[in-house]
Image 1 (tube, rainbow over the protein chains, first blue to last red):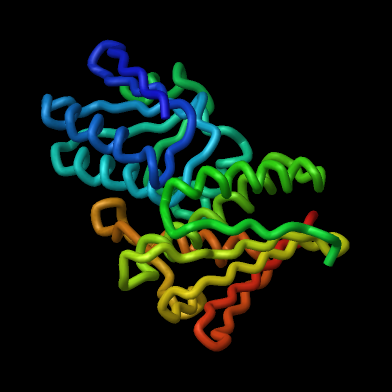
Image 2: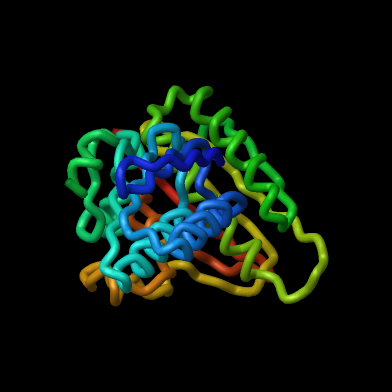
Length: 111
Length: 138
């Protein structure tokens, strides 16, 4: 899994790539915990280069959302490949995560 | 069933990379669209992850067989393992209507399997779990 961290104003942007599965999701979980530990509350995860996600990866997203909600923080997702969108729907995640087509639109969510 | 192939994996999570490669090869050979390839990989990954993570009470090496084939417009997969008896069809569905704060972490993998596949059947034969999965090609 690839992970690039950027700052855009007050928003922490995580650009993700590769696979979010049983062997790799811990990397994202650790990064999320590090960000939360720094007191950051606005997080955007960009899935532009993610080509695979399973329930372990999905679980990390829910964990991050739940932690951020405790501190009135926000987690927004963007740029999920078409063939993977169904999995976010089946998981009920389209009801609890704001999901945008592009990173630019997702940044607008925090404006 | 048209001639498919059977992959044998050891009960280690790193073996899931071989599973991913095999699904990709199967998908290409059968001309499956990206979404269908992803669905197949996800379903088999979720089931194998469960078997490898929770299925065995010892530290021995066990072999898990995953057969993949096509029958007309239907894909068919059979997973056979010697893990403890487990019927995924009896697992409870996660509560997807609850708020983000209340939502339980877990139970999602089997829910994905049951939603994505068109037919799932389980049988315990001797000491073997056999799970038969079918997916219709649109």
